[in-house]
Length: 206
Ligand SMILES: [Zn+2]
Image 1 (cartoon, rainbow, N blue to C red):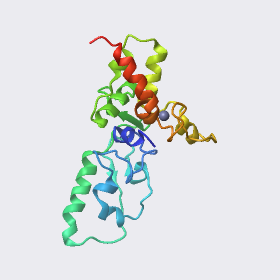
Image 2: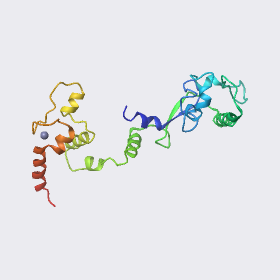
Image 3: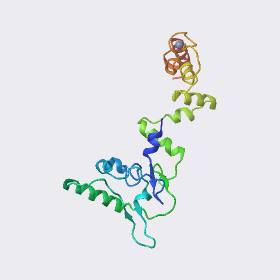
Image 4: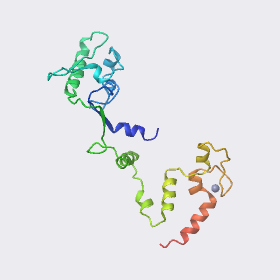
């Protein structure tokens, strides 16, 4: 799904009660899930599909929380360092908050998701900044800007896109009656349109 991976990479779980966050699979202590960071330990854990609250013992009054993660076998000497690292990481990320679990958006300092900050995240990933100024700040009617914006994302209702939406039709260019009517053909490569572009540029002042 377009954008989902980018969204998911920029959120982090804020642990409260821990009853809605998966202990091994979700990223709640650092940039990686425990499953990815300690695959050996995950493979021999007794309970792989547990939430955080299932493996965290909270004392009744004021004491320290304890982790109760169990494994299906004893560890070998060469695995001890890994186990120590695992429990040190847990100790340094023991939740103290007992509110509801939540999500934090890393695209903003205040952690609140906005479509604007998500747009910025997507733009950075693409490497080439989206030419929004050329489109939305141009001296053109809004409907023209909207069309250019839609065409830039290849979402205009040309034959190819209509067929993707389930319409039964022949993908033929309405101008030159040949080739498939892709967005690139319709707006860039069509020979008829090419002539129109050349003519229109004759009237553009240098
Ligand atoms: Zn054509």
